[in-house]
Image 1: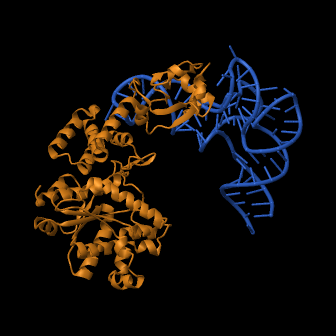
Image 2: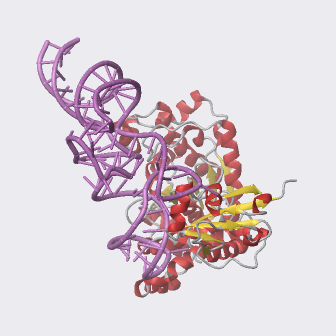
Image 3: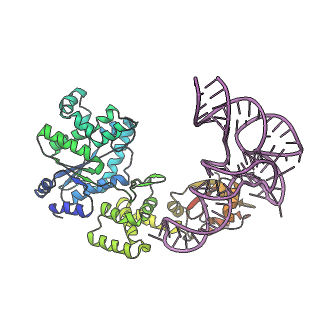
Length: 430
RNA sequence: GGGAGUUUGCCCGAGUGGUUAAAGGGGGCGGACUGUAAAUCCGCUGGCUACGCCUACAUUGGUUCGAAUCCAAUAGCUCCCA
C-alpha cells in the first residue's frame, strides 16, 4: 500500500472522526514513513475488544509503511483518565499496574510486527514520568496550560457539572498525556497521535503543548468509538468485557460474540476491525441485505476476528464447540474433547459411586449441576421439556442416571433450555 | 413533638373474615416459531422423593371454627400540622 492511500483507506472504513489538520497530515504522510502513537490504559491484565480498534489503527499505519508506537500508560494509569467516566476512579496499586502492563505488552506482540524497517515499538510512559519531580513538572509543563482552556474541555466540564466532582489528580491527567506526546515527538520523532474520539481533548492538549514547548506542529486523528446502533459500547456482554486473553474469554465465547452482532452493526464492525477489503465488504453487505438469515457477514466477521486473535486452532475449537453447543449430537467424544468444547461451561465433580446401583436421580443431578435451585424447579424443567442429557431431551421425571449415561469416560452433559449447559464429572476417589 | 395514611410473592399491583400458594402486569425460566436475531404465541414461576404435606401477605401477640383480610404493640416508608 502506498503511504498516501492510508487516509483514504481509513476514510472508507469510517475510521476517521476528526483530524486536526488534514491537508497538513496528508502532506506529512506522503513525505515518507512517519511515526504514530496511541496510548493504552493498563486497567486490566488483558486488552479487550474496545482496545482492538486502536490496535488495528496502529496496524493499519504499520501496514502502510509507518512506524507504530504502542504506549502503555504505566504512569497515566496511576492517575486515571477522567474522560467519559462519571465518577472518580479508584487508583490502581503499583503492583497491579505492573502486572497489567506486562500482560498487555505480551498481547500487543501478536498484532503488531516488532521486526523489520518499521518495527513497532512499545513504550511505557512510566519510564520517563517516574523521574520527573513535581516542581520540574509544574515549571516545564504546567506553566504551558491555561486553566481556562482546561476547564473548557468536555471531559472536565462533564465532571464539574456532576455530583461526583473531579479531583485535582484527575484534573491533571491531561497534562500527563499531553506531555507524552511532546516527549515522543522529541525523542522518537513521533508527530502523530491517534485514538478514539473520546481522546480528542487529550490529543489536542498535546498538540498545544508541543507548539508551546517545542515550537513544533504535530497532528491528531481520532476514530469513532465502537458502538452499537443504539449507542451502547460494543465489546460488553452481560458477563462483562470481551477480552483478547483466551483465559478470560475463550475462543468459543469470542467467536460467539461476533456471530451475534446485529445486522445493523455487523458491517461497521467489519470495516472498523478487520482487514477485509472493499470488494468483499461490498459483497457481504449485499448478502446481508438480500439474505439476512444466512448471516454471511456475521460468520465472516467472527471467523476473521477469531483467527486474528486466537489463530487457527482457536477458530477450530470455536467452530467445534459452536456445533455441539447448538444442539449437535454428542457422540464419540472423550474427556479431553469435551473439556475443550465445554471450556466455558460450569462443572461439578461427584463421586462415581453415585452411578452404581439405583443410580443418580435426575432431579438431584440437575441441582448438583447448578441448573436448578430446588427439586421443584428441576421437576418443572423436566415437565416443560427443557432438560437434555447429552443433548437428548429427557422427559422421565423418575429417570436415574447410571454408567451408561456417561458421554465420555467420566463426563455427563446436562442442559436446561437452549444454552444452559453444565457438566457432571464422576471421579473415582483416589 | 401532634395527626393521617401505608407496608402483599424477584418488582409493580389487586385482594378488607372462608377452594387465596394469593387476580393482573413486568421480569425470569421453559417450549413453539426463527437467522444461535427481533417480534409473536403457549406454559411455568415458595419448599418438600410430592394426587398429599409444610411455610408464606413487615414483625410480635390477640379476636375467631377459620385471617393477607378484624384488634393491639413494634418497626420501615409517605404526607399534613408545629
